[in-house]
Length: 162
Image 1 (tube, rainbow, N blue to C red):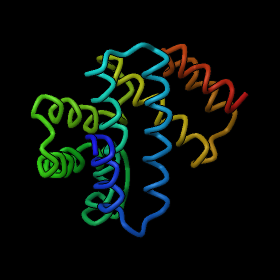
Image 2 (image 1 turned 135 degrees about the horizontal axis):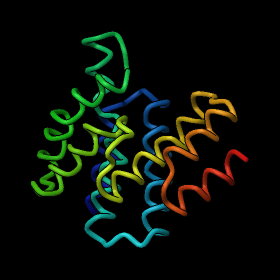
Image 3 (image 1 turned 30 degrees about the vertical axis):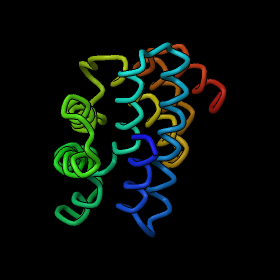
Image 4 (image 1 turned 180 degrees about the vertical axis):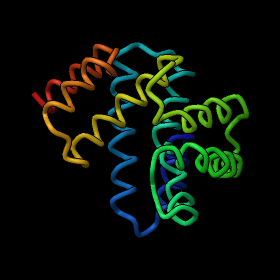
């Protein structure tokens, strides 16, 4: 089994019994993978993106336990240590782990986006959250203008919500 399969399995076990969270990260992964491929990411960046998409919300458990909230600012703090531990058990290389942890620590920060992997993760997560959170058409239109930068991500947004 490759890294992506092992990370997917580990995350499903991490959120065992929480179908909503498992479905969320699988949907974000699917969109991130597609957007990354359509945008022509190199293999290394694509792998980082896919691992980050699978693990981006790993901080929710600790956020809810410590703060009674899954707010993004808590996830961004609580997520990297959990991801580092999980990826370490899976023997994911340190360079990949560091970038994945950076992406987890910033995936709810929409300013100063550095790297196409970061941009795509934010877009894929938004695409899923817009539906799951029942965002209004005006909120989606605003995000299209202010947040979306990739052609593939924007195309998905248009197909899903316009």
